Amino acid sequence: MHGLTWTIKNMFVLLTGGAGYIGSHTCVELINAGHTPVIADNYDNSCPEAVNRIEEITGKKVPVYEIDVCDRAAVDKMFSENDFDAVIHFAGLKAVGESCEIPLRYYRNNLDSTIVLLEAMEKYGVANFVFSSSATVYGVPETVPLVEGMPTGCTNPYGWTKLMNEQILTDTSVANKNLSVVLLRYFNPIGAHESGRIGEDPNGIPNNLMPYITQVAAGKLKELGVFGDDYPTPDGTGVRDYIHVVDLAKAHVKALDYAAEHKGTEIFNIGTGTGYSVLDIVNTFIRVNNLTIPYTIKPRRSGDVAECYANPEKAEKVLGWKAEKNLDDMCRDSWNWQSHNKNGYK
Image: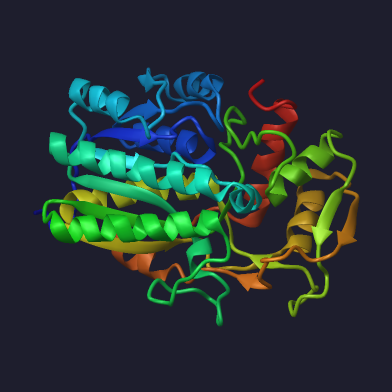
């Protein structure tokens, strides 16, 4: 044990869903930190071009297994061919609205993938697991900012899959004393790599605010719909904790270092600790990029809460991580990516 010096060796890390939005940025940061990633992705919500761009940014070749991590045989074969030190599990279905329409597909995919990975890790003696959880596990919070020990509960099947996975991982780490689990509860990742070569590339109409704004700015969509302007917030629009995806990616590197030195399960909020309203984002985007964004106010969406932002102090104290980029950076980098990649990776 190195105490808090954490001079961790180069780790050989499996990234499931590593070609996706958060996975691709984390892959870059892992390489920058001297680790060696391997990607497993079925390209359900991502595409192979993202891997080419990762290699272009880092100058390193990244091995890829085009598999579904729910496929036990494919996962077993991959583990038998590699000597992994850790798994970072991003792969999963992630659209809140869709999860309400096809809940069984969400439960099957998002829970099975975690169980298959844990079984393979046990078989092959891999001890470190970092999981992509979400602030949705806090449900409708009674107070903000959100701290890790607060009660949990969810408003949709997607959120429940995150919370159930947290439980599965926690129980497994209690039973298997060699296992280290770090649960990262993400707030709202936006932005893109400063190179403009990787970024968020949603399928079809975006579910999230920032890609919607950038597609309006690019002329792909006519106007932005702002859902609700009568919330008890400073300007009436919903307040969220937006975090730059590169800051979020760096949190995974810190989580990996932590897992290598500690057993059991630890939970961290990964946010900035600052809440921004929808109109804060829109107005900052307009100012920073010198563009106009037409928008209309629409009725509230069911299930949306007025305010949700993190208390990220635990991550700073225990992991030595804190968000460094501000809202201007997030808006500038989002537009830099969109304006140079009008159709995403296509």
